[in-house]
Structure formats: C-alpha cells, structure tokens
Image 1 (cartoon, one colour):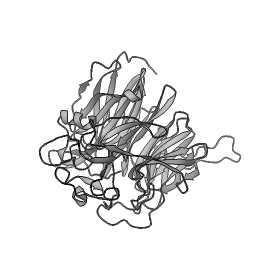
Image 2: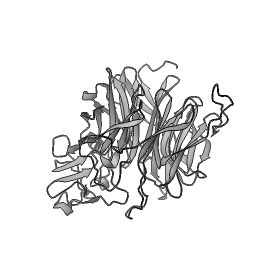
Image 3: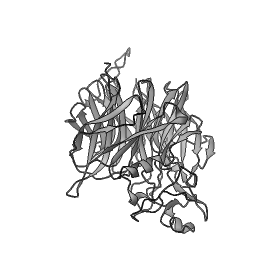
Image 4: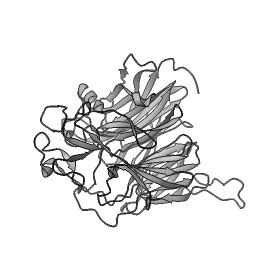
Length: 491
C-alpha cells in the first residue's frame, strides 16, 4: 500500500451510459466527491456502515467518517497516537481499523475497534453470560504491518493480513530483520487473537512462485468464501495466493499463479513509455500476475475469485531492472522486468495488466487480456508514462450482485483520471466488459466499496492522488449510485 501526498477538487455530477446489451445496470450517477483536508489524510480504503449511513475512509493518519447522503465530514478520527491506519472493515456497527506501528512498522501492529454510532473506541461491553463481567478490549495486538482487514461473512472472525514488509524507503537497502508475514485470526465475540497463521511448512503448488526475492511471504488482500470456511490471501510479491482453512485457522497451501504470455493475441501491451505513441503489440515477454486486491463470489454452486493483477516489486527495488540487462532491445529496452526471474531471451515483468477470475484451485477461468488498457486508451486516459512499468495497474476490486447478475468493479491506479472498469461476471468463463467509470478531477483509485442501502446500490471510490491547478495534491473519495433497471425496492 503506497503512501502518496494529496489535495482537493470538487467535481460536477455525471452520468455514465452503459452498453445497451446490459439489462441490469443502466448507468452511474456521481452523487458527491469529498476532498480530505486533514494534513496527511489519504483516501485509501472505504467501508460502509448501514446503521449510521456513513462511509468510513481509512488512510495513514486517520479515518474520515462521511455522511453517505451528502459526503460531508462527520468526524475525523486521529489514529496517530497508535500508529498509522491501513484499512477499515465494518460489521454490525463495529468498525475495525488495521494500525501499523510507528515509527518502526516492523514492530507489532494492532486492531482498533470503534463503535460506528458514537465514533469512539468500543469499550465497556460485557461478554454475555460471563461471571464476573468481562469487558471487551478496544485494541488488540496483531502482527507486523497489518494491511487488509475483513470480517468473515458469518461475522464470527476478523482476519488481518500482516504484510510485514521490512521498510518503506524506496531505492534504499532493506533493514533487517524481516518480520514474518502472517494472518491474525481474531474471535469477534471475545476480541482475542485465536491464531496467527504463518507459512512454515505449508505445501506449495502451482507455477512461478517468487521465493527468490529475499523476502518471506507478505499477505496483502483477503477474500472469504460465502460460507466462512476458507479465506484466500494474495501474496503479491510472491505471485501466489495462500489458502487459509478457517476450521483449523491455518494455511493449507500456497498456490503459484503462473505467468501471462504477452505474445499471444489479445494480450498485447505497449512496452515503450513517454514516446508519445500508444502502440499495443505482441512482445516476447511474460507477466507474473502478482495480484493485489481479491474478492470472491459464488455462482451455480461454485466459488470464484477475482484478482486485480497489479504487479509489484520490492519497495527497495532490488528485484527489478530494465530489460536491457537481459539483452532487451527497442521497444523493450526500457521495460522494467524482474531480475530474479528473467534471463537473456526469457523476460518476466511483474503484473498482468488485467484482472483474472480463478477457481478455488487457482486455475484461470477468465482473464481480461488487454481490455483494461485498450479501453482506457479509447477514453483518452491511458498514461503512456506508465507503459514500461505495469501499465494501468489494476489494484482494488469489489464484487456485487444486482438483481440476477454479478458484477466486478476493478480500480485502475495508473490512468490520467480515476477509472473503474465494470464487468459482468455472472458466467465467469464468459465475463464481459460493460463500461468504465471515469471521474474527472480524481486520480489513482486505491480501494472500492460496493454496497446496497434502502433498495439502492452504490460504489464508493477512494482516490489517493488528485492534482490541482496550483500543482498541489490531495485525496478524494467519490460516491456513485449504480442505476439499476426497476431498482425501486426497499430493504
């Protein structure tokens, strides 16, 4: 999760028309944009609370609680006495915040619990039937650098991905020791850590697991199946996903995600940056999927996983080089590749510039090929300066069922305007592009939250970076109403 400085912009409402072939979604109406003004506050991860109709936006120094109807700030929650916040999840009026330690994020992090009604630390609630009365803590210690946090669908457990990255200084040597990546499993009823799932001795399957980077596995995103039996945890830099058995609270396996062949039709990329020409071409390069965000959905009795194949390297950049190091020539001469996986005549770059749907065994059911990039280019928002380095960088993902259809929303971090691609994934193997939500004035969507409230459907988009006319930067959160045919029912 990158830290980016920010600034504000106010946008006019817009309506994006969708392909007429779709029978459920008929458009998107932007309801509001909130510019975060607290110094250091970043819009990274949004979460919706139905009890108070608020959107909670986590990012570095705190959480901004916004009125979901108007976008007005209800309260800024300062977390700096505890550290920095990376994520927020909400369930039944309880907000859980993932807090990394400061100033040294290698130390143990914590989870803070807040009551969404009072917006204060959740304390003083007695455990049922306990004698004498026992009280729930508002802070729980977890592993190093807690990133993604999520409640299981049954509400019984809270899962925390402890990314445990050595340090945050780009182009500087990593500091030691490297903390162990893990997932903390918290019992929500007692607010205690009942397991810390690590990776020692966990079987590995699949292909192209990057175990040669000088780091251990670093959990990033988490998706849980609808029955709360299994969690799927992206191990981004390792190009793998960990399968967490929630009956044992332990990892059952790590699955390598393989590589994508950019020489195949439909997978073409633009490998050349800043040449004023966007030219998608087949190249003799493979892309390691290295996904960030992940979401799950169930259809026709099967669970499927949606991965945003962003790509990532070590933060000190010790595992990347230009393709010239391995004999790459124009147009590949500036392409950034993995120097841990590439060899002369056999280039591997990080990121697939796509999103993928996989079954729970890790097999690809669908990949978007180069649709995300060609659609961004068609809208004039493709950033040629990112061509050599992971392209549009799909990062955040949300999945939502609308009527009898299932849709995936994919945030593109590296376009010139905020962009979220929308796909109908009802039939996973035949997923199809629906439209792209483009928000003028916003940039770099990091997190997405799709939710239903009082019969209407919404998509909250956290945008990390917004450039202003004065050259400053800020961070915005925007809310769209998803216009659904005959969407008039009340919850």
